[in-house]
Length: 423
Figure (cartoon, rainbow, N blue to C red):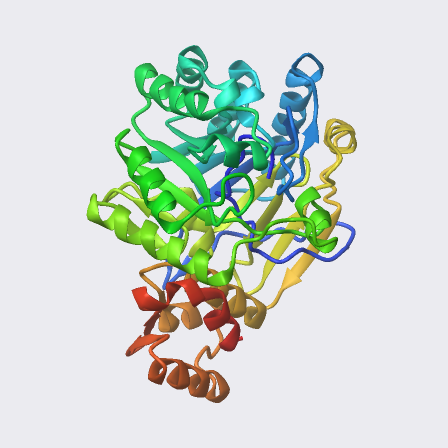
């Protein structure tokens, strides 16, 4: 994760395999009803790579970021996608992730939004989010983003403790993080989210009481949304290498679980809904872009390293694409008139069922297996899966109501393992 970056993206979707070019499909339908259609725009530049970050990002001085060239490439890619089909549904959400999108000139970001609007059109209640870094977000920047068309900001606060911020490699301090929230409000941002990382054993080791105090302090800013993630150690990161050598302090599973429970209890007390394992929102303020991933909607992936998934309107199949992670190579390709993802993967209906279980069971609402089977044209409740479901139900890990399944609140911390048992 780059400095200032959050995880409101399809980060849990499996990597795609190599192939030559994408097979373009239509948008998913459920019972003949059009589902949501989203766009994810990846901005790969940041000022510093955080030691826990495994996203595709490149440390670049502000003055060396190719604002206009990268804008031109993304706009060109939008045009190339438009030629793949005669018609497209309107976009229900757009998300600018990174990297650090708040480093991008707002005018360039706005030009990308204009291209998306003129090419695909926007739903009347379209959600347009941008990830922000506290060190690149002040009142002026927030105002520029609003003017460009952004209507929701997601700020990477990560911690309200000086020592833990230093351990996490953040560029901002506690006051700077809080100042960015105040600046966004002063600029008139009406939908504001922030990220928090818990389960941090480095610096001043965090307790469940610390985690509770931090989320309550952030909630006092009147946030509409808050994402709380347990610190994960990923291979290929600085933390991953330190952990491999046994030189990284790591919180125990019990401490992480206790912090998870403390956060859940605190935010529920002050009116937040725990609508997804790591996400909380005021009623009606759930991140629509997040929901599009977890519900299995179609989405375009725009920009270097971006992943996108489009379903076939005539079957339960889908195609997943991923662009080359190197920004220069990506820009050269699309500015040369080629829509040539680095990787392409065909997803058959059973693969999509497994992904739907993995992602959808993270939601408090759960999944309607009947609707899922109808959409993909397969039998979801196979004999083997039915046995696993009933075993999980007896263990208190799954609630089953006719065709609908969900994980009870007390078992949400085990969602990944529960979904895996249904694969």
